[in-house]
Image 1 (cartoon, rainbow, N blue to C red):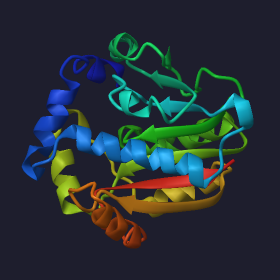
Image 2: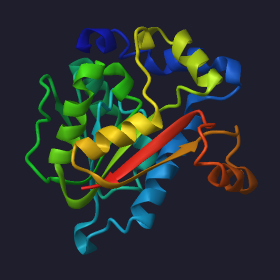
Image 3: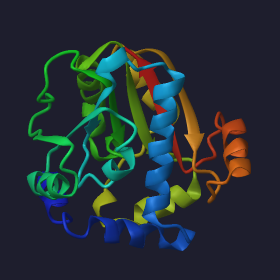
Length: 230
C-alpha cells in the first residue's frame, strides 16, 4: 500500500481530478464539503474542552490535501499515513500539522490522546478482514467522550462508483455502506453511532445545503459520514 501511494505523491490531485472530471466539479469542492462537515461536527457535538481546544487525528491523511481547509477547524491536528513520501509532501505544504508514519496495524499514539479521530476515504483501501482492527485503533486513541468519524464513498451512488472505477489507485477497492461502517464503529466500542449522506448536489449554496440535510438519511449523496462517541 505504501508503494502504491508513494508513486502518486506528486500527482495525487491531478489523478483525483481526472477521475471526477465527468462530474464538472473540482476536487477542491469535495474537500471544502468535508471540512465543513467536520467543522459542524465540532460545534454540534460540543467537543471543545475550554482553553485546551480540540486535537484531532487524520488517519490515512496521504499528501494532506484536506488539511489547508482545516486550519480554522482544529486547534491541533495530527496526520498519519503508510506512505512516507506522501507525508514528506504533506509536511512541506502544511507545516502546522504534526505528521507520523504508520507502518503497522497499531497507530503510533498513546491511548486517549485525541478528541476526534477521522478517516476520509481511507477504509475502502483497507482489506475488509482488517476493517474492525482499523476501527478499534481509531477508538483506542480517542479520549472518553471524544468522537470517531468515518467519511467514505457511498456504494449506492452510481456516479461515485464511476469515479472509483476511473481512479487508478482505487483499483481493487472494496466500498462499504454507511450501515456497515456504523456496525463496525459499534463493534469497536463507539456508542450513539449515526450516519448521514452528503454531496448530493453540486452546490454549496444555502438552499442546496438545506435540501441535502433534509435527505441526509437516504443513501443518495456521493459520500457519507458515520460518527460515534467513545
